[in-house]
Image 1 (cartoon, rainbow, N blue to C red):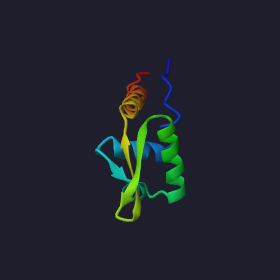
Image 2: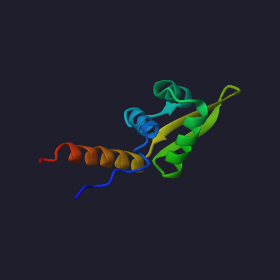
Image 3: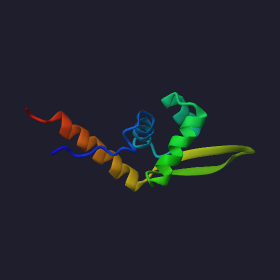
Image 4: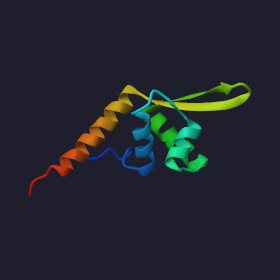
Length: 96
């Protein structure tokens, strides 16, 4: 029987975001936008979905007078990402 892939992480952009965040302590919005090549609007929507699921934390503040947004992966996010990767690995290791 196949295990189910987390549909929230199965989106290309959300998976890209999680892949970036799992390897850094924190990343700012501009860095994530550049690395994923997403539009600002689409990235904002996807970050909100990940945040609402408890997979990431969004930190809003200011650098000087300019607004600054950064993100970090949560413990739940790390667990969900690792589970997603393990399910993918189980698909790869299936013997016929």
